[in-house]
Length: 353
Ligand SMILES: NC(=O)c1ccc[n+]([C@@H]2O[C@H](COP(=O)([O-])OP(=O)(O)OC[C@H]3O[C@@H](n4cnc5c(N)ncnc54)[C@H](O)[C@@H]3O)[C@@H](O)[C@H]2O)c1
Image (cartoon, rainbow, N blue to C red; front, side):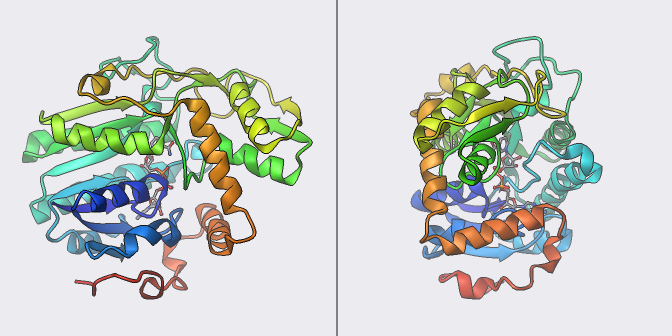
C-alpha cells in the first residue's frame, strides 16, 4: 500500500512512518516542519520505500500534486497543542479544520478513498459520562482545539457519505514516549533542568487523565485499519488507567532524582480547555484484540529517559532543532524555513515527482 502521511515528521507521525515501512508499505511523508523535525525521520529516511515532501497542508495545489499515487492517507498534521488556542483564534481553525478539508479535497482529486485521522479526547469537552464512550453526547466544546478537531471529524464523515470515503477516526488521550515534544512532562522536565529545587504547576495538580505510550497508539491504529471495515470507524485510544498530575510529578522527580518545592497555580483547570478528568472508554478498540503494553508510570519514565538522552551533550542536532521548532510554533510561518535543505538531510529521498 502507498501511504501518504501528513505530519510525518512529528512525534506520533514519525513512529507511524517507521512502522508502515517495517510492514512493507511505501510511504510519502508530507510535513512543513513547523513542529516536527527531520531528525525524527532519520531511521525512515534510509529506507528505499520512503519519500519526504516538505510541504504545507494549507497549500492545496502542492498537497494535491504530492498525493498522486497514494492509496491511503494518514492525516496527522495539525496544531497539536490545546493550550494557547485563545491567544491565536485562527490557528486551530486553519491548521486543523481547513487543513483537513484540503486533505479531503486532495484525496477526492486523486481518487484516494481511505483516511485515518488523529482526533482527540478533547472533543468530549467536559462530558457527564466516565469512562467516556465514543457514543457519548458532547454538546459543549471547551477548547478551540477540540472544536476544530470535531469540525474536521464532521467533514471527514460527510465525505464518507458524499463521496464514498472510508474513515478511521482515532480520539487519542495524551500520548507519551520517545520524540515526545509537547505537554506537561516536557514542561516539567524543562523547569526541573533549569531549577531542580522548585516546580510550578498549572492547576491544583489533581487533574486526572489517561495517557498512552506511542508504540501502543501506533499498534492500535494499524490494528483497527486491518480489522474494522465500517464506512466510518471511530475509536477512543487510551488506557483504562488514569493518574493525576501530582502522581506524574512524583514519577518525574523520582526519575530525575530531584525533590523540588511544588507550587500549584490552583483551580481545577490549568488553562482554558484543560479538563479536570479525562478517562475514555476504550472497550471498543480492546474488543478487536488490542491492549496497551505499558502502564502510564512506565510511559512517563520512558519519556523522561528520552528527554534526558536528547538534552545530553551528544544531541546537538536535536537540541538545535527543538529550539527552532519552539520558535516556529511561536508564530514564525513555515514559509520562512528556507534554510532546511531536505536533500542534505534525507539520504534516500527519491527525486521529487
Ligand atoms: N500528542 C498527543 O498527546 C496527541 C493527543 C491527541 C491528538 N493528537 C493529534 O495527533 C497528531 C500528531 O500529534 P503530535 O503529538 O505528533 O504533534 P507534532 O506537533 O509532533 O506533529 C505534528 C506534525 O504536523 C506538522 N504540521 C503542522 N502543521 C502543518 C502544516 N500546516 N502542514 C504540514 N505539516 C504540518 C508538524 O511539523 C509536525 O511534524 C495531531 O493531529 C494531534 O492533534 C496528539
